[in-house]
Length: 298
Image (cartoon, rainbow, N blue to C red; front, side, top):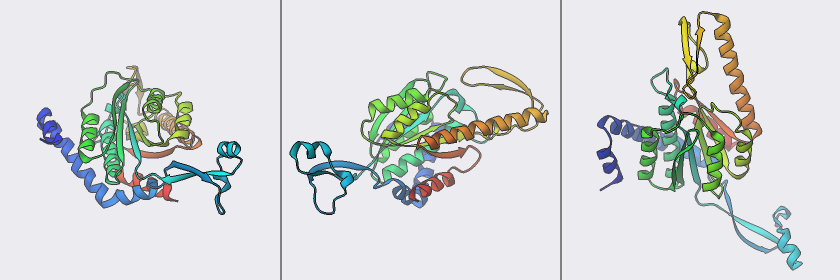
């Protein structure tokens, strides 16, 4: 019996059809659009150590192994070979703020689809895919594997998972990544990044791994329409605030504050040598992914 059949038996018909629809849609996107872009952007960039041999004419002096050279008295160089496959890790934020959505989909639903697209794209290129689901705690870890059945499990876990905690702790998620993935990996962090004090850990992680952030934003987090008095609640802390959306000073202040926060976050990603894909829940997510892949090619 296949894994798909087992899963369908355990899920409600509605949820099974939802996961199946995501699977079909993302498979088509990968086959028609994304696979070649991904390979150009990521494949061949990883190198693994193979051997040390004596220095020869034409060898790059930057590859000299000084320890072996000093021990033997003869110049030696390190030889690397291109990795035939990559490990792709998806770090998916399932904190309570992801349940918000003013459009057709919540941020968590968009995050699940983006994760599915990235997972299918990687597996079509014969790479392994792993998953870390986190809130302000590590909620679930799925070790990297290959195969379409494994991607089905990744999608199912993201869509059906019920987190035990409400908050977001990106620092802990990055620290856990360092503990379970020891070799260099391609890492996608999918989150709304409503967290602070993770910049230092992100910089450390970027020195070991090839990290890309996928920022998921709802349009109501960018601008507020005139709706009169509106009570806003922080989904992670439960704190509420009452604002008058007819007051242009209030709505403009909200817009400027959100813009400044996102701009500062982008500067932090850039200074940390971390890529960024910006996704909105009310817009197609494929174009931003393709633009990012193509920017890496150059």
